[in-house]
Length: 111
Length: 118
Image 1: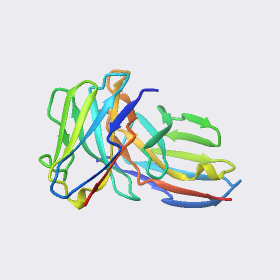
Image 2 (image 1 turned 135 degrees about the vertical axis):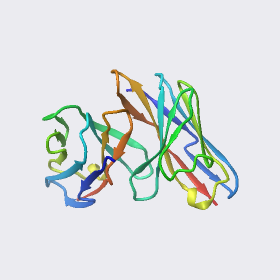
Image 3 (image 1 turned 180 degrees about the vertical axis):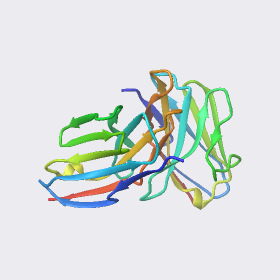
Image 4 (image 1 turned 60 degrees about the vertical axis):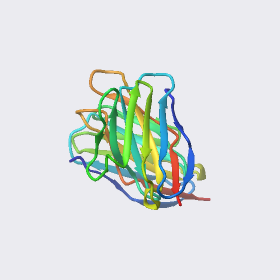
């Protein structure tokens, strides 16, 4: 059974600071996704990571994937209040399309 | 990007009644759709995988007779919560798979449907 663990689960940080969210998974996988969820809303796709060593950046967020370590990171640079949300990583099994989600990281960026 | 639409976005019903939620892929054909449930402050939990023209595959612990799934066309899957009770109150999210390559497709999520059972 594929397990996906995120760390930390809750994160409160000041504007302007940097931080990294970690996503570990238990079996080999082809794809890893990062999503953002605002309260009461569905998921917003942030990144799709397809191969070992993949790195993608969008604004203040950068995601990377190490398939050998079964680890993905989501790095936040110079956080701003608008980044406050819950972030989920999700791993797609090699045998199909189903996703297994991590527990989520609730991020609060304080002014 | 591809669009997946859910309807209704918000529903309140009485205990014992049934509620139907629709999930439509608006601009692509989806042979596979997934139904997730999310309780407050928790992650998404996969309930079932819906395949067009065949029976849905339910995850362990999900009652197939309570959560009826119908995937009658390549653009529509429905989830019916039968005899709903307050513990069924949750945020239900569907996703649809667009086959881009041979074995796996990119997934697109609907806006979610919030069910409150009184």
